[in-house]
Image (cartoon, rainbow, N blue to C red):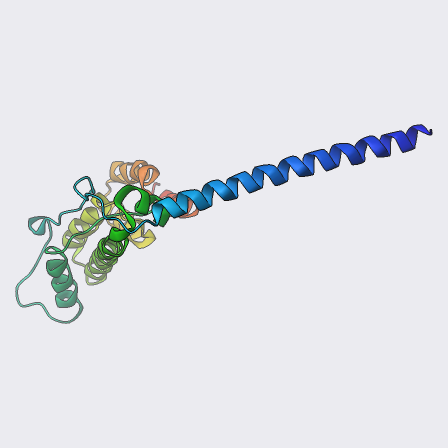
Length: 202
């Protein structure tokens, strides 16, 4: 039998074996996923006592009297959210949420997460608006509060870095860079924030 033919046969047998191994692994992974999903989807409610809820400190924010327009809208939204339950569930899958807290609580958890998203968006928009009307100190207060809530919005960091640059607080920009590394967000967004902040280092 020619050597080439023998090599072809060996390659074909090896390839077939590897393909079967891959199929077995994929089938096992799919079965494990379906089993986990079935377990997670049981209509139960578990204790939410360990849920890391976020409490809004109204005293930490620069509310004003007799505001109107956008400022009034931002302030009203934050005040309303202060009486709601808020939770940052970024990066946690629905399956993991159902496993830990029960499928029966998923809708409630979704509401808490939506409250968090609204909080971060409102703080960022509020702080950015204050920056544009040159209320830099109040803008800084709002945006620093957004950072303390682990905002993953790029505009939060862009505007805050600009304020620090104006105040010649380069050390604060480095603190922002360190904070970004711990934020639960996508790698691409981390890189984008890091790149934007780097523009204001020098």
